[in-house]
Length: 518
Image (cartoon, rainbow, N blue to C red; front, side, top):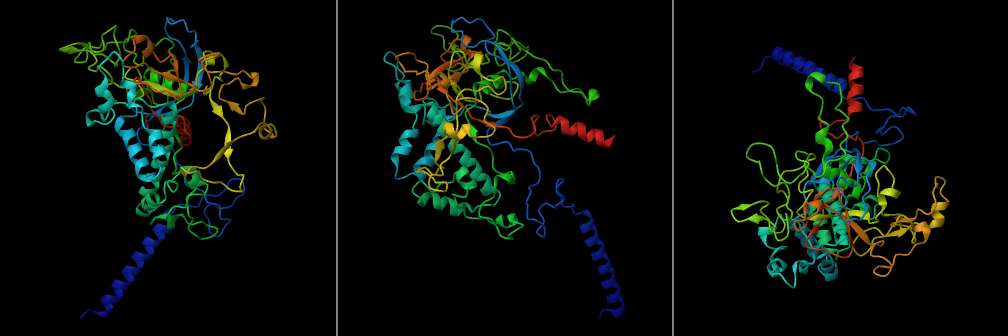
């Protein structure tokens, strides 16, 4: 038997230990943050119910790398041998953003088509609209027929860049990718029920698929997951159907990069502004401004061979056409090892860690093409192609179309003019950037440059070295495709412009922290 006195002593010891642990937990629990303008406590069920998510930096989406923005000279860095006079050098600034590490590959685009075929089983038009044009390989005087049949679907070409995709198809791929990435984030966090959601999509005839904007507007009712109970509204004490954008989990849209973003990312100038040495801690890197770099690599201004000593000496740095009839060099000594495209991770990445920003395939940019865009665009985040839209509220609430997306309508002149912060003239449809002039561009009649011509950059496997310079620019109709044109996606960066990592963290925050310690 246990001695009663010993039992009593043991109970007292446990009680003291329990009280100590409880006090420690209470003392270590973080204080609830208060509003600095009203004094009310955030996230307080006994307060006004205002919920504030913990401050966090934007996460990096799948496939993306961080591109720290800055100023650079956009435009020609070599002689204008084509006589186009369409890339006059001009100093601009690009905000930080994210960009795909590689070009979108065949396997990625086939994943997109598979999803369409599974969700829109009864609507073959949606699938057919997304199919790349494999006939882009066909030539009357070349034996390219095997590429027509095999390039897009054979596993040997899984990680080769997808081609034969129009600008519109690339744009739609970005929309689809945004929704799938955000949907997967909600699955991983346990905020939606994956099994129930996938079943809903399969049985919804296409319209009941997850769409980010529809979800945030409450028009897509997701099945709550096991962790949604942690998101109770402090005011109503109820679990919301959907989380909000303010929770910081939903990523911004994947999209095509602007011409300025693409060109800036291609140069990889970050290599020329190294971080301070350890002994110089607290100082910043030098503000070096390079204006005459010709290609995405800085080791050799002539640009076509790796000139450092060692195993890489003499290696080509891009997939391009060296001369007439010379697509890959001589047997036994192939220079770029690719008669057509090469795998998306071929060659060395540039300063930002981006592959094939010169050669392999030219890439679609978001911009509408004009020869003198550099004379017109803003010097901060220059872009030509804006089209202002809003949610269609004609029925009194948002509605979804047959693809599950929120219906949008163009903003009218009168709506914009009545806004109190309206400052400029005709800014409703800036696709052409000069709509106020009432100029009409009749394709094939007055000019080949029109509101549907989009910028392509980077040069391809079938281009000479001139087109590999990021400053060069060409255009292609947004409904056309080619075996030399592919694409990669980008994403806007919100918050700190110096990134999330310790190496490129928010310098202003670090300096503020250091001053507090002192």
